[in-house]
Length: 313
Image (cartoon, rainbow, N blue to C red; front, side):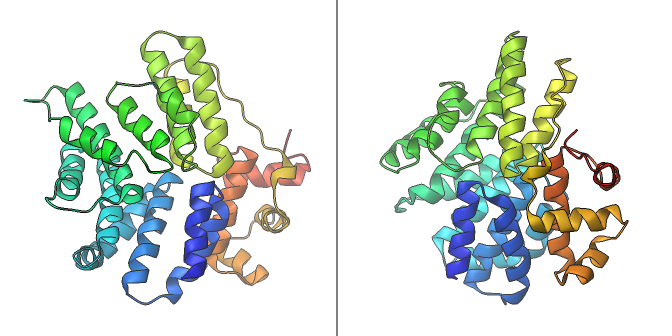
């Protein structure tokens, strides 16, 4: 359980490769329990933000019944699961479901506030409301209750980041305030992405290019594939200059260098795991980290650059 707390801290600090490797190793060892709910919810969230959306959704589908059962007993499970499922709904293009999930949690009468868990849910609600406003479907949802809940959490240490995100989602504050505020590691690249999108919509192409390129760099630094993929897609669709990232081989850890050498030999993740006495899933985590750090799109490209002896060129 202490290791699980440490892994969660790694997520907040942006040490996502370390956290992912720990979850891959630990989750199969933990039987269904309240503790397992926390682990699997965080693992699903991390997979989602790493850009592994299918894997994240698969975890949610497999564990939803357990999440709901334990959520009836534990507010923290219920709230965290809601934030993750709400973000998934938004990614699927279902803001109504995201807002319904958030409202069911946030608007309960007589509920004690848990700012660290509820602020992400308020951000989900704000984003869902903003999407519904843009779609102009019927009466716009009332924002006031969610603003009030956010203000109730104003004493929380990371409120500047989360409160700024709520305001920015609703178009009531700048994304730059979120990027500059202390908070969970993923909020900075996400804020840079949204700032870049806003700049592009306003016709500021130079500003958009700068923010989106920063988003790619900040997202790549922690492994936020969700942000990197979207920022690069906006750069391309907006006709902006390509990011042109190329990785530095010095960024690879010793273990990653070993894995890369085996990738260059044509070994599968399972074969790499057997060779290095690690699980197939852990090998997969290392391969994903290598592709991200080298700025390549496939194992084949990584292998070619490894054989060339100059992966950073």
